Length: 94
Length: 156
Image (cartoon, one colour):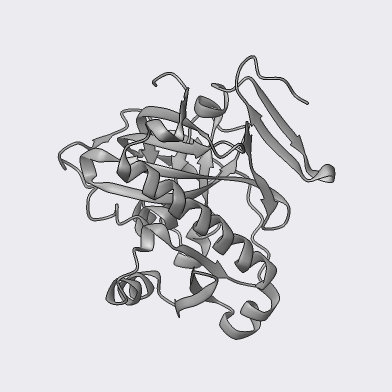
């Protein structure tokens, strides 16, 4: 484990800076999903749903099929909010 | 100072850029802040989302399997270990916290033998190995306040 460092954003390389900008969008998309959860559950309950740019970018019952859908649209699944929507109580002890 | 959020039934989350250079992966991950977890982990659904599943297999270059099991309520798994860098933007938008993790635990869906739906209930986790690098963790859900402060940073 390396040491925790705080660096200036300007010290980030180009790839890192671009990724950090994308992370802000990712967080907004996650917030969008939370805000619209009830509506999304009605439409896409028991499905995996992808949100990109505050829009539903895809949905499927199978996660692998959903990530394939996203790749066809040139969206990187790793940079997209993807969540399984269910009304079932999923209590977790981690 | 890093600021997280409460969502998904009020659970504490912190988002990060995860860079696994050796596997050419840069992605975004929402981590559940778990002060009871010894180590941080990329969970099964995120493992698939990040495209790690075909990259982490026994004998894959740059990937090791943990020689020791990680134990949870469902039993034991032997996660894959990858070297990762995590970037957390600070709330002042000018600084970034960077943490290199030499052995980030990666748990695949196949490892957990959970259904896809149940695997979704196993999020990626920010455990004590990373949380402990910070000076202060504020978890005040009633005040909607989730902050991670660097060592020596004031709480005001």
